[in-house]
Image 1 (cartoon, rainbow, N blue to C red):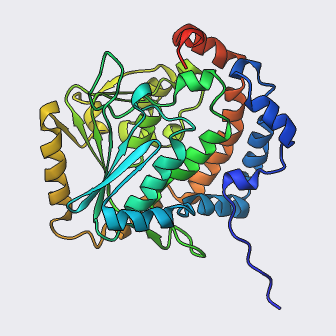
Image 2 (tube, rainbow, N blue to C red):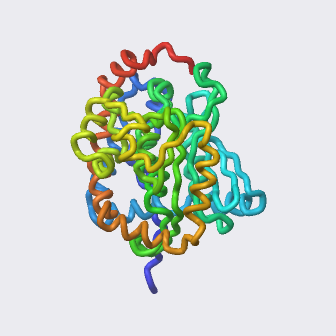
Amino acid sequence: MAAKKMNPLRVEQLVRGVVPPKALAADAALPLKDKKGVEKKYGEFLSKVLGDPRKGMDLCHAMLLPRKESAEKLKEYEKRGRLEMPGAKLERRGRASVVTMSNPRYLNAEDETTLVGLETAIDVATLDSKSEICVLRGGPVEHPKHAGRNLFGAGINLTHLYQGKIGYLWYLRRDLGLVNKLYRGLAKPGVSPEVDSTEKLWIAAVEGFAIGGHCQILLAVDYIVAAQDAYLTLPARKEGIIPGAANLRLARFVGPSLARQAILAERRIDCDSPEGRMICDEVVAPRDMESAIERLVERLTGSGVVSAAGNRRALRIEEEPLDAFRRYMSVYAREQAQCHFSPALIDNLERNWDAANRRV
């Protein structure tokens, strides 16, 4: 009798049992500065898994598969042309599926409340048979300084991070999952994503700013249109963490020197600057963003998109093979665990973010 084929395990399933549940639950309830750091064992374990070529590729493949709930959400989206989930809204507009990141109270920052909804929205947009291209943008926010304005996003929710509401696994689930899906599309069972995958072109529309994790997202999409007054930053060093896969990807856009300045010295990059235009494909007046998106969708779909998936896969073979990503994530898994539980991170959040006095 043939051996039963096991279902591929996502990160959150793979680590079950690595940390005793009682210890995990006790640590989860504490602010970050009071945690004992039991999740560091996750970092050690996942670094070894990702460091093994076969096991690591299996994990990368599992994280690129659509989430289980995405199939049901896809049926709903195909009927209604709209979805709304925590962290993201999805709407079909002509030939495009538009994913709008939404966490208005926190400048569209990413946290545990947004992760599943945004990844599911990316799954559904990619799988939707009635649209040919995808758009990613940020929705309107509530902050008095920006009230009602669309902002691409402020990166990780530093308030929730300080309060201990973002676990270490969040980083791995995010970067192996939704961010890598933007870059590689959705995997199919039993075949390497480098051979076959479900893919669409992704346009990112940057308004206001793309800070931290939201700047990392820009390095994974196909085309970026930015408002003239928008800017990009990667303040992870100032916070005390590693900026996702930016260390792997940013130098391809701006070269190693500027990449180091952005990652190690927090250099701000204005979109409407020579450096910004090395990342952003098009810069428009803020008032012209809607028409620019419509024009781009028409231009990129006007002759059909039949070759889009093939061209994306061909570009990645030279640019970033999946095995190179696997090896990077092995280092990232280990080092981010050390950063996440470092006293320096708490000190940085209190000094640079005034985190102790932020509202919940």
